[in-house]
Length: 220
Image (cartoon, rainbow, N blue to C red; front, side, top):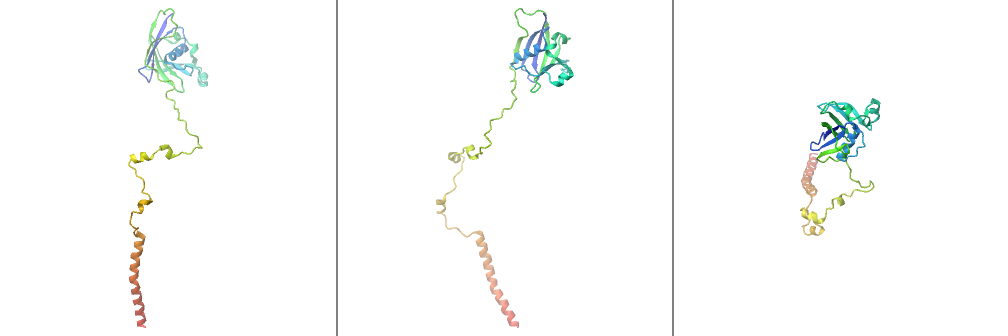
């Protein structure tokens, strides 16, 4: 039985590569599962192979766990298609998208056709593995556990700012009431000074007002 040796690479991770041997009469689902045996991923997610040209342009789709839209379009299933039925080029390429919800994209390229399989080897077989695959759900955001809504947020306690910290930062305590006793008696405020100023001014006018009154009496 002839074997297909595929090189599988991540589209976005150039330093990760796998080489996998698959029997020519095995299916695209066999290749799909072999890829994730090599990456350590759970393979039970909707995925698709696409027959591609040398520029990785997607052609016919071959799918796994299709949604209703793909079913309505009549997309063929991976377990129904043998690899030999879609390989016409000795360097055939497949564009492969795994897990449409959180996708990883792969380039799958046929390296060579091996005429004789190794006795006792179970296929698909991982022949070469380079680099560690990224985590399957490494981009999932795990928010921190928030305190119950009923709890009030204590800003000072959250900061945990001690008196020692205050001294180290150069802060000093406000002088207490004992310190105030050392100062002289408080001086007049600005408002009081202003009142005295205008008071003295008007005190001069009192004499002027009296003179005006007496002069008017003299005329009569």
